[in-house]
Length: 213
Image (cartoon, rainbow, N blue to C red):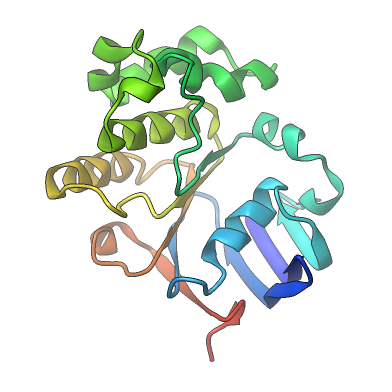
């Protein structure tokens, strides 16, 4: 499903990924584990096209994403939940969920939205509320819902359990656990695997932008 080969990425002349590589099989749930600053977020941002590769390949179902514009990647069935949630504050919950679907011509908005509300029914009651009025935990759920809406093949979750209350952490684990035994591949970037250890099929450790020895 996903393969990174010898990926090198710079940010403002600072090398953040140094020959990093990994692969993720169809239906596999894996963790990308590393300390803060190890390169986890840079890896996910590179896959999504937010960072440009200096060298290497990003293969998604055999297609090199490095030569594809960032906006085209959501249409491939890749859902992304950034660590900072990345919601548009003035838009409603439902509008934030629908954002990536508006650039995904192969997906039915009504069908995907109905499925998201089935997985996260608590969001339906707040669908008309603006994102800026939500708590941090509620915003995490909306960011996950947005990723689920468009992520029909691959889901990238950046620190989904970071900075949330224990009850919400359990809720997030429950939702992510429902994705097991499906064809959806999931990559979870996090500092440790305590919250999702029971869900994982594999883990990849990154240190200073490279694979750990």
